Image (cartoon, rainbow, N blue to C red; front, side):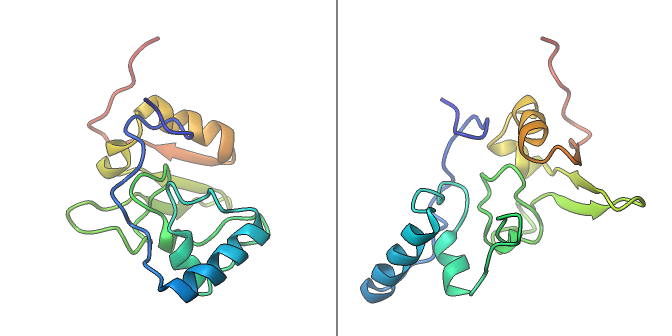
Length: 138
């Protein structure tokens, strides 16, 4: 019962920005033209569209609209709360990135699933698991 990114619980509760019917029709055209109609499982693409968030040159949208079930749900997300904070991106001293995962990141990902995601999708970033989590030997 995993999601496409190695999670164990699938979709987060509905965090999608609501659009009126006219906005929804325009959004659907935009998302279709971007080839992103199905990229809403762990990202509020409607919110990014309304907010004018454009993907970076690498195709990544801003963290602001990551849902709690996104592997790199961060404290930059509008859905991060004091009760369920996202992880934190920190630049290391050499220009690379470290992702300090929070316990909330492991509500939807196994520790192994999160590390596997980084190996495949964020190979140049270092993930750090919360202290209370231990990897199981395979």
